[in-house]
Length: 345
Image (cartoon, rainbow, N blue to C red; front, side):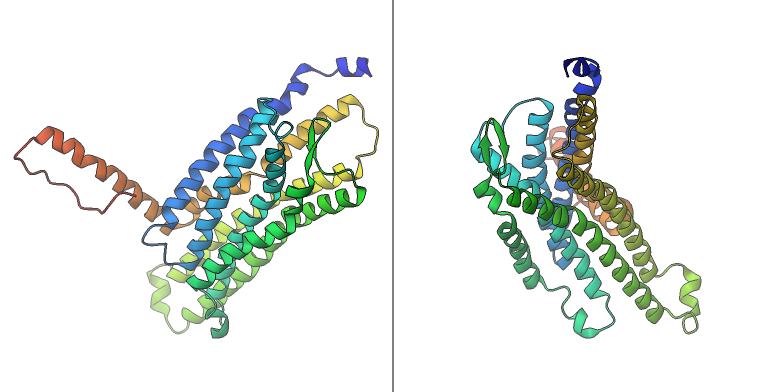
């Protein structure tokens, strides 16, 4: 056993720590920047009255918690080797709970936003009447976290530190329930729900496009260029396809890894195999954060309206800094001309 351990290169043993330090820190920085930008855009005057922006604003808050508690503790413990979960019982319980709870809450709120868009584009008036209801949205953003708290709150009670390691109780029935429940709801369900919602939403938009802009009745509209419906179709297609690909890349490997670890937990493995598996596990677990870190970047690439509002808010920040500079240069008794673009957020 010792000879096998000595044959493992130092780079392979250090790879899991380096992945968490560098890749994890990169995800933490880009994810926090995206969350703050999403919070700023979705609370702007142009978006705040739209129901789907209420869901996305709440999802950005959930993402912010996910990055600044779940991911940062992973970086500190698995990267810089600062033992937090294995030393403090409170962090052990809350972190193991938030790992799954923050995941499903964020994705659940994002799915609500997509579902609201699905209802708003449905041909039936009965379905459309359920869309764009702000009061209902505010209720749902409280119901979703509470529902998932009931599903995963057992981790706060049952997880503890034993033999210097944070983990579940040594009960085989509970272990299988906890692991496979996590696989189903935090890995497989996001991929399937994204695929189903994307399919039906795009189907509704294409039906709506054929009804509003029939080529035989309004030929001049198609000659002038793409209509707003065709632009919406293109933007939603790009966004949903991109999000579906990201969800598949980040969630399916995570589900496969959890299933594989459960099946092979009692198998004999050589130290070299364990070292390679540890590297793969760290990569897969870090990749599961990509879906949340890329939400802002997918929106700004695929959504023209999102880009326009972001540029407008950024322009306000720059224009509100300009008067201070002008005051120091022009001096007392001189009236400086300042562009009136509104208050800075």
